Image (cartoon, rainbow, N blue to C red):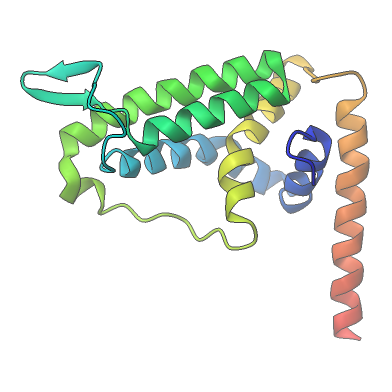
Length: 175
């Protein structure tokens, strides 16, 4: 799968998330999962000594792995699609800032009481493409947005093919 092949990423993700209830659950919870991951990453060591915002004598926005992953996500999403990617990048930075303030307020002990979901099939795919997938789904549902003409029709065909392949494999195992 090509790193910037948006259709293939969407087809993979869509094949696992084609049930309407599952789609609604992901639309609601994927961005909060990213936010929670950034809360946990807040407690990683700083990559640089400089911290842009301080409360009293304590740093709040720390240029650590949470910041690093936020920048990577933002650049990747913009590389996938400029319009939706800039919105996704903005949302990533909003999550990073908000999660930093929450983590700072909660402290290490309270923040680490949260538990992450078990995402076993493709951890990188779930965490990397999940937020962008639900954003594009929302933009498509609300505004009919497509990264380019025919995108959703092509992705739907690929999703249908992946689901059929999965069902065929499942049926072959049962027989």
